[in-house]
Amino acid sequence: MSSNPTEKSDPFGTAHSQGTRVKNYRSFLVRIWREAEDAPWRASITDVHSKESLAFGTLQALFLHLHKQIENQEQDK
Image (cartoon, rainbow, N blue to C red; front, side, top):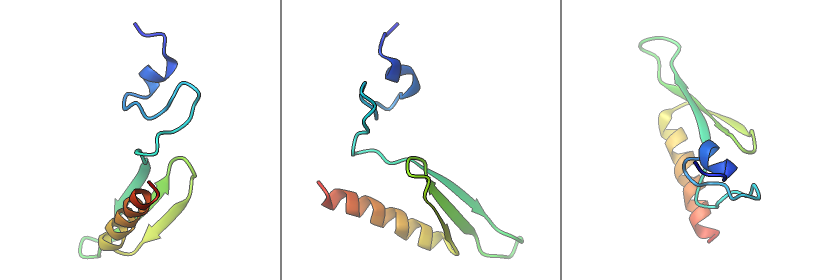
């Protein structure tokens, strides 16, 4: 059994022992719903680290936002 406290709680290796995050990892809570069977799907996304939340009227808008987040992260390298 490892004595590293982040190993159990962080199986993806996204945190260091000092508590810093690795830049190659993003974590979001995504909610998807529709208000009626024939209604369009809607979505919201929350960044689990910053707690920032955004709402989207379409799934395409959600996917575009996620793509931009990753693209911006790639440019910051």
